[in-house]
Length: 333
Image (cartoon, rainbow, N blue to C red):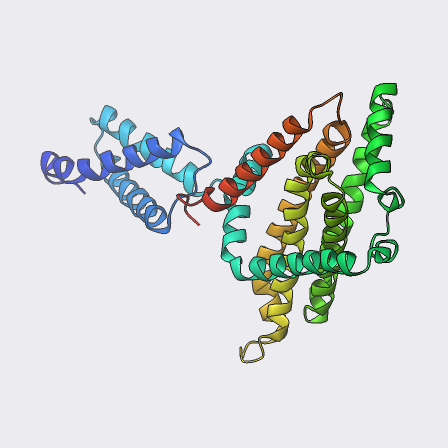
């Protein structure tokens, strides 16, 4: 029961105003997740407002004040007991722009190991081809890459002059690329369950193929063709494969962490969110890489200048680096 109304209002009004301001911030950015201290404060202010409203209900003449406090309590109740999620699109965007890059940075050592093995394989592939040029047939398993660089470049540029040989099948080719590359990335990740040995072999082998092909074209004097062909999609596709290896080494780390006294199931449950975040990012990046490869990378001079294609690929690489290094840094984890 309220004995002195003026004293009661002067004591409670700062809390009502604070609750109103907090609710206003939530309404202004519905997708923002409250920090723990903000959520606890909201709950406290809601409880205090509800207690004050119960006391005001005993006063028949304070209609306006009671309606004001009642509206605050009702809004706070709606925020605390809300069960509907945000829009799917907003949640997916928040995951891709915040959660995925945070998971990538959190597992930076595993990415460094993945990239190191891949480029070690690339160096081995280039060295093997330099020592024994006939090893190309064994190292490169793709038919069109077994041609000499001069034959390949001549065929590609001649076909560009003859017309668009990709007409009518770009969509199917793009889907095939997405499916194949995603399968490779998931396989590389899954091989982490072999204590990382399978992941290491997969990364090393893919690096060997890239190194052998790269050396073959560079030593033949077709560096511009090579960069113009690979960079537009490879600047996204290759990092995505490395992310698959990164996820595989996260799994391997959970298996190998014997000194951790927790059970294996608990260790795997701990790393599962990061593994899924990384694979989700891999899938999105490989969709983009498949589109670029089918609709852009397959066009060479005289249709598209090599310098333009190289510039696009470098721009993609810089944007991906900035995204992974900076996105989500100022957001609440």
